[in-house]
Length: 247
Image (cartoon, rainbow, N blue to C red; front, top):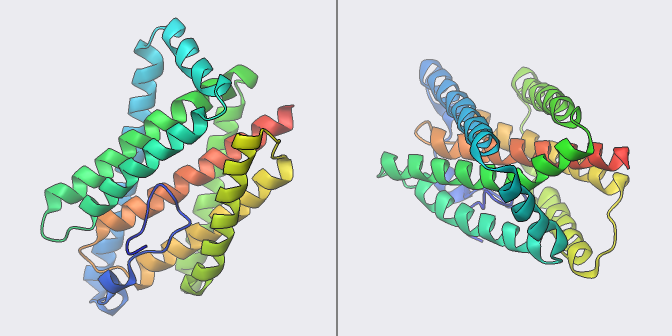
C-alpha cells in the first residue's frame, strides 16, 4: 500500500511524501503548521457533529428505523458500510495528499468527514436506544484519552513512529477478526473492544508523532485527516465498549 488509508487507521503514512519534516522548519513555521493542523481537525469535528445533528433532527423516525434495521439484520450490512467507507477514504486520501491543489486536499478531508458521519448514524442510533447516557460518556472519555495521549507526545517530544509495524500487524489481525465475526456471527466481547481502544491509542501516539516530527509544513490537511481518522476510530470503539458493558 503506497498511501495511507484513512478509513483504516491501521495503515502507515506515505513516508516518501514526508521527506522534509516540520521538525526541521523554523520555530514560527512549525508552530503555525501545528496550529493549522489542529484547527482543521476541530473544523472536521464541527462538520461531523453538524451533519449528524441535521440527520437526526430532520430524518423521519420511520426512515431511521428502516435504514438502521436493514443494516443490523443483514449479516453483511456492516461489511457493505465498511466497504463504502474504505472506497471514500481512498479517494479522500488521494485528494488530501495532492500538494499542487489545495482545493483537492480540502475536498478529500470533506469527503472523509461526510463518509464518517454517515457511517456513525446506525451506531449512534443503536447506542441511544441502549442507553442515552452512552454518547455523552463516550464523548468525554474520547476527549480525555485523545487529549492525554496528545499531551504526552508534545510534552515528552517522543517519537512513536517505531510502533508502526506492530500497529500495522495488530490492525490487520483486528480487522480480520471483525470480518470473521460479522460473517460467522460469533460475538466479540468486552475484552476485544478494550484491546481495540488500546490499539487505537497507539495510533494516536503514532500520528501525533508524525505531526510533531515528520509531516511537511504544507501537509496540515493530510495531518488533520490522519488525526481525525484515529479520533473517530477511538470514539467508535469506546461507544461499542460502553454498549457491550450494558448487556
